[in-house]
Each structure stands twice: as structure tokens, then as C-alpha cells.
Image 1 (cartoon, protein in one colour):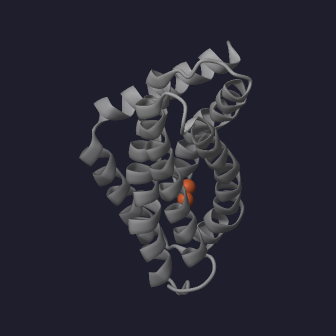
Image 2 (tube, rainbow, N blue to C red):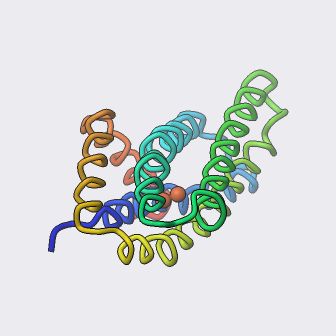
Length: 186
Ligand SMILES: [Fe+2]
Ligand SMILES: [Fe+2]
């Protein structure tokens, strides 16, 4: 059977979760007083901004959700508005993390606990959000969308992939794998 759009989104979730799982350990190490690895933090922020927000959330919000609305899912209300709000929430978490990082860089002390809190916010948020999508939204998607909708979605996903480019995808994927390996070993 051809790939379904939801399978592509699930693959992206797996990549996001590699980073999110590592964030937990990263934050715990920071709490234990480990030196902050600023370079890795910058890469984590880039991954979240580019891959999770601009890439993955865009496929969901700009393409999948409107396709569902076309097939009768309410534009306002559950589950689309709730999931959109959750995306906003995660964008805010990343924005706050950037601010805390800047404060920490300037002062060398302040912002430290906020950086840890920022990482915690993200690793507490993502598993729930992804669970809702994979157990509620995606089964509903595969029930409601017609074959032609699925085709259209695949084409739109390809367009979004092309917009960002394979090179950037590979770089972000390599980062996620490297972070996972650094954190958990082989
Ligand atoms: Fe989402
Ligand atoms: Fe998602």
C-alpha cells in the first residue's frame, strides 16, 4: 500500500521524540550542575523551531487540518482548535527558552533555572501532544479522508519538504541522531 500522509507525520514524530527524550536527560544533567553545552542548546532550539514548528506543525495545521475541515470536522472546537492551541503553546515554550538562553549568556547566572524549565516544558508537552495525534487525530484522518484527499496531502507534504530542502532535513536528522547517541549511547 502507498504511504499515507499520517505515516509521514508519524515518522516525523519519531524524529522529534528522539530529541525530546534527550532533552529530559539534558535538563536533569543541568539540574545536577553539569556545565551547559551551549552549542547543543542552540542546535536543540534550531531543531524545535525549524523541524517541529515550521516543518511538521505546518504540515498539520496548514494542510491536514483544512483537509479534515473539508470532510466535515468542525473548524472550531475539538480536536483541531485544541491541537492548534497546543502548537502555539510549544512555540511559546521555544520562544521562552531562547529568551532564557539570552539572559543566561548575558549574565552568566540568571536564566539558568529558566533554561532548565524551558527544556522541561518541552519534554512534558510533546509526548502528550503526539499521543493525541497518533491515537485520535490520525485514525480519524484515515477514516474520513478520501483517496483523492490523501493524494493531495502527499503532494502538499512534498511541496513543504522541497521548500526546506533535503540538505536541511539531513542536517536536522543527523543532529537528532547525534544527540540521541550522545545521551543514551549506542
Ligand atoms: Fe501537532
Ligand atoms: Fe504532530
